[in-house]
Image (cartoon, rainbow, N blue to C red; front, side, top):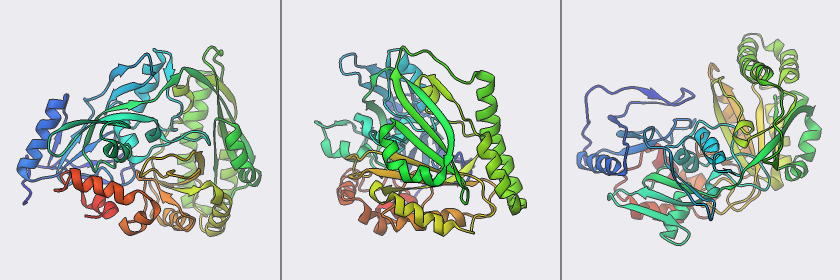
Length: 442
């Protein structure tokens, strides 16, 4: 069917990292399910695709529309909190940063969060957002039910007892199956976090990570390629009645905002211009990173500020292959990152049963590389990507990667099941894009 543009001049938009630009034929802002149904029907009638977008925080083109863009900015908030089960139902556009305070008012919390909270809940589960913790899954693993608008206009509820195949696929559905309008999540009683950050020898941190990441509820570490030190972050659950303590508002702002973001931005620009400054600067930045303890509510301490914009690539490797993958990555990067001071990040997650989850069926370690916004090329990200793919690395769906359908099919045991559900629910590819077709097939 020939596509017919809606509206006149197209507005050019971009994602958070500014590496993906798009010009939708129309941008719509529904405030109700009825309006979402209307926009789906209108796109169908005009023969154009329609793509939902959350906060635009993906580094890949996963949300890039070819036709109409449906933003969920005005469709957010609490639908219901079940006092018996503790499950919370949220409108799809609800931002992660809104969920913590909302739940805390009811003495509940999510058991895990990532270190970025700008995403929408629908976008987070659709791309596989995760935090860290050897006993915790990603956000999709917390989903117990969802309501999704299909291409035919039907609004369907799916969980482990109703529309089971749709539930299994849509928990991490890449936006390929329909437009999610509500998400139900498992929560736990409110707790606080005890966060500790410190510098440690990199080789020692790597050698003990598989052990220590199971001792602590949540552990991750950062390191600069070619450096000898790691910044380790440990977070452990403590009773909700624990007294808050920390560095104080002013110190926290100076360390986390100015040093943690401003120093990296400035240092990266200087190292790009004068590579010989990398050694002393990386040591200086590591010593200035926050090294302290704090106790507070989960949504206050999981998250790290990200004011310095960057592009990111992340691969999930089996935990059993982490040490050999890390060693291979170290060799691959040797001598090739003279002008890079942005740290790599290493996290861990428990195996889950979500069909397209990067942690499906295996205990997982995530290794993420970041490239400054002003970097001349992404050769560095390509190098990290290509090295880790050799160790059964699965790329994060919402971050930059260069695998396509043939390779992805081999990485996911339920890939065919997902494609089958997609073919059944969206045979005319109303919700598809060229990028999505490159991942799943046309």
